[in-house]
Image 1 (cartoon, one colour):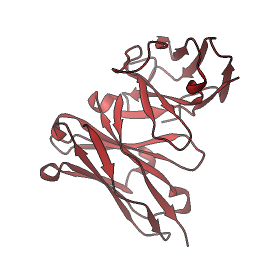
Image 2 (tube, chains in turn purple, red):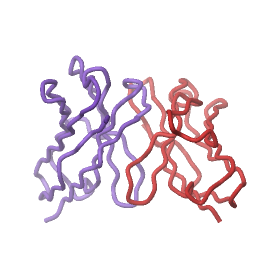
Image 3 (cartoon, chains in turn purple, red):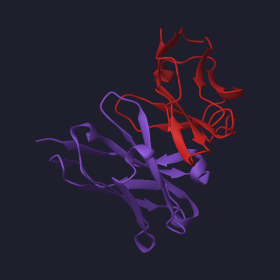
Length: 120
Length: 111
């Protein structure tokens, strides 16, 4: 079945970096965009960016510009999101989500989420 | 890109209909027919309920419908069921920045 499986929970110190992976299966990986969305505890969904899995082009929210990198490995059908210079307020669940309509939204398949906690 | 504006909460009784609004600008909701709605139960992953303003993914009940007028999109749930109690988020493509923007979320309580 179509699914996205993410890497596990992480605990990081302020200033460190974290990489979350997202393994896709059950569909043609390069035919759909991959978006990254985060949700801090008790807060709203927040879009971070997306990658065109076919050509590797990326686009990020201005809020995360300079701190986030999204890559993909087509042979492994896996996307990656790296967030650097972590702050306490980066504590959140990080989701990958398939873009049914490319970069225009319609996130139809979601990963299970990866909890990232930033703690001293 | 500012978050889209949603009411913090709405409520309704079983069997009734409710509507959740989502207000943006001509740069996002008003400018493109790329509004989506997501349902999120506590501790669960968001689920796509509506995309491209009015379209329902396969498997989503036809009790859920979407519409748009100007800079405001709406999600209507008819024949409310207890299981509809959840948080609902709208999102829109924002063409000027080629990005997505989410709303603040609306908590639906089924009385």
